[in-house]
Length: 526
Ligand code: XMP
Image 1: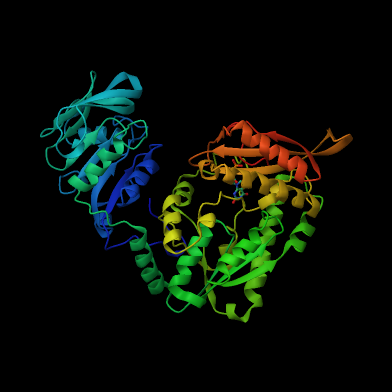
Image 2 (image 1 turned 135 degrees about the vertical axis):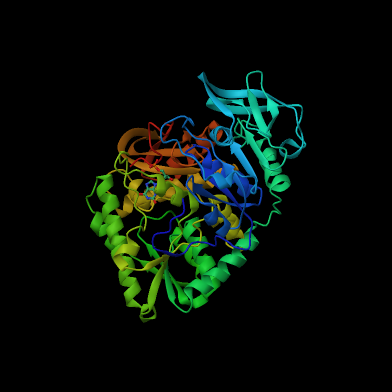
């Protein structure tokens, strides 16, 4: 699944480093396999099932993992595999559908039992060499399948079983397959199974480290950018910060970063970005709050807010780009696209999926400015981006900052926006985050913030009646932001935050906690 439409450099699909190819058969866990492999310090990429041997050779592939997937090998048009990928020259690990496919292609028999097995199982390991080295006689494993293997392909023997089926098989050399999912947490020793495959079977050396990435990425960026100039919209978020720092290390002053204060940032965010990056990057900071707030006056519809901000952002960025003569020769735009964005945009079917909200980012920039895009992080997962950022010396509080939507606080002040309401929200939000950090819970939630609602309620403070605003607190746990659960924050913490907000933020007299998961809610309120 490699495609890089207008990207002039994609982040170092390194030729010198060992690569594991994960062949994607549509499992919801494919990305998870990739993350587990990377966590084992081995580089990997996800490929479509019609990838060829020559393509994999060009990437320095030393082993294959065939993912699971929803198909049955007997389905019409079921995804297959090039025969020369299973001929034993490359080590292979088939997972679930990958196991069925290997069995089917190599001459064994797969059967549809008619009843699915979904959930935990106990697996009896009968051969501890190779894949299962170091594991016990019995291990817990997570199953999720309909078909199963009845007859092994010639040359294969079972290496683990359950009371019902062959749970794993091997050819005694370098071809393995497992019916269960080693990549999920419910297979407690699954990471060891994968590590055994990588290190014992494929002979990986663990050469995927952030230091190695930085060194290679910098060399590649220098080679591809040459003496051209690049521009980067720095938002203060992790991804654009790390992308900018990396490109700046490669080309120094030929990278100019533009930081636009839309007036909808969190408390002290602008100051922090300027203090952090001002001394180390060529940074142009623009206070554009006046024009953004002007355009948004009286606007209440969330989608209109997003559209206005998106358009204004592009206009503002373009103006800054042309204003400075140093930008005369700019022909590249640096973006902080990361691997999950790349995977998701490939699989997104915009015709069939309903639009919940239009996520505005700086996506409109390259088309409008007709610049080619440099995406040095397009092969990295978020945790890897953070490690690379740490390697580049970016402070922890920037690296671990929760994601912040492109339209900023505009979608957290519900309804019409003005400076006063933004200031109120900023204060309430800062108190919430300060207390969350003090309780050492900031990193345990994926996102936490305050929302200012247009609801006004009656309260009493001292001997006086109050009539003030309602602030909602939102905190969620999630891996991928597609689904999320509300965070079970301690009541004492919520009590402290509520008391402080009501006492310290004059316009607010009531605080509520949002206990809606996603779905049916979304993470943001607008
Ligand atoms: P929702 O609200 O859709 O949010 O559940 C999922 C994640 O996306 C973020 N988000 C945005 N990010 N532009 C962005 O760059 C946007 O317009 C936008 N809207 C939501 C949200 O903060 C959460 O992390």
